Length: 244
Image (cartoon, rainbow, N blue to C red):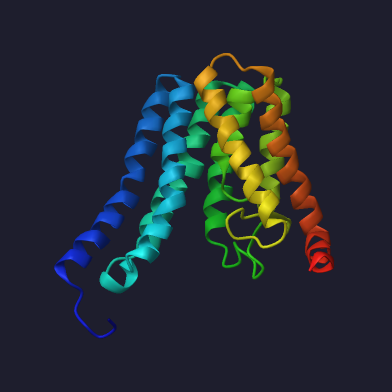
């Protein structure tokens, strides 16, 4: 109850949640080690594990009232440290290490990815009032996944994609926050689930990529790209109001 000192059991549970969150940095480091060996499927598995931890720790924190039980600890600060490593630093390293960019541009583009991502984290309006990411979110793990594991594009095409995503981080385009964006919520969650299945199947079959999983990846990517365009034009909310 409010005003009472948290019990020992409550504090243990709250610390357990913080330790679970902090364990994400270990999976990120293991992804880095795998990338250094150029074992990109293993690196992606570890990044997927980090994303899983990031996806459920907030729910656990709310359930166990972690902020109330341990007010001197900031789970968000722990999250920020791990997220930047998992979604920017290590994916950027994997893209660089995979050699999918032109050699003369690779280091420059990766430097821009990191600087742009750091600046994006400094934005006060990173998430809009209607719960969208504003600009391409720092999800370079997905960019690395598609460029390394799904597509076999020429280096120049990959460079163009990376450059475009860097620019889109600072363009006020709305990108879905699948677990929070209200418009098309059912579709967003369904396609997110499809993407998880496609990623797991792709990594399981690596280095081969059965066509069914290639097209499942493409379908998920296309869905969220179209949704970003529709939401940015203000059509998603209008459609949602029409259906209410």
